[in-house]
Length: 293
Length: 197
Image (cartoon, rainbow over the protein chains, first blue to last red):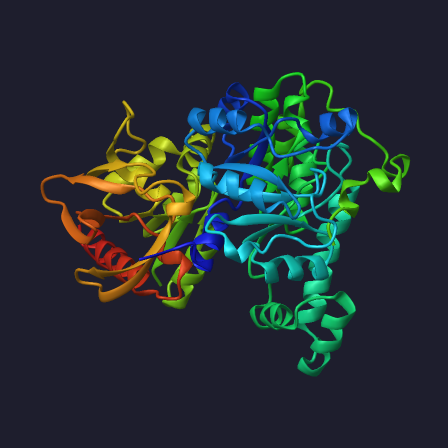
């Protein structure tokens, strides 16, 4: 018997496909998310839009919150550790969290090195904006990817950019002649072996979700249309007027992302969505997507 | 050609489709209840059972799925799908579909860090089979007439009750298509015998 194998870690993410992973900050929200049909919850101290407002250093959540959420639901529980923070990650792993997010939403603990995720038994999800980042994270042992988008903005534009870019670069790689791959690897700062594997399989070797700015059911469906395997919704749900209804609508729009009449029905009277932010209005230093490398 | 449906609400749907096609049968992605009329057998894939149940209720799948099973057409549940099929679920008052004469317990091997791969022997299918268990349920009790096909560490992890097949693990995550082949065989037999009625 073997635990923590690639198959077990990547397989866990495969089971989440077609689903919605929701950010929650307490047991009550976790139950609403589970009831609405979330495939997992991300236990946090603050959702990204509040992290943005609060400023200062954002860290791993208080373990008490994570524990409370783990006790409240039977679906998998994820939690975020700071980029490069080996101890936060080990603490969350020891607590029995099902999946860790080495996340740019939190303030990085290390500006040079990401975690060596293959060292852990618990699987990791990481953000990416292009095939270079995707391949580096896979090379370090990430078992799942997500777009970075621009978290806490309610603006889908960056998630769209990142999803399109990764998928276009995968398509290019797949049609590339084998003798061109090394140069491609150098250009993207990507591990050659990972690119060779993507080229051979015709797709990323791990599931890739959309995250960062999904604010409506139509946004979730758009990301599925663009090839996401599923979606993370952060600030959108519990910042809306009727979180239970909103959460259900996002889940259904993700399942039936090409059923436009259904999405029209789901989108009726959801109340005011979160107020979005223009990306251009966010100073470069405050863009979470610029964190990590 | 035998047509095998895969319930396509959430989870590892694509992998089952691939496995069905590798075995030369036709795969149908079932997203709406009406589609059940056109398939000879149905796979309930791995994923999150609570999520699938919400969507089953939302789209009026519950009775059509029960009727599908009661019509004698085979159903195969893997992991979350096994939980959906079971007659009883430990800790819950009501089962989901309640079709298969077994009792299952959810997440019975622990959380994700306890998820594992192990080599099994599966009666009538394979002497050596590498199985992937992810936050897996197990079959606590097999009812009368239910055939236990595999056990791991003293726990039942695969069983067959009439035309219902279920396992705790994920055959769809490996390139070993023997279990899918076995299920397609069940669907072919049922199709032939239902045609003779």
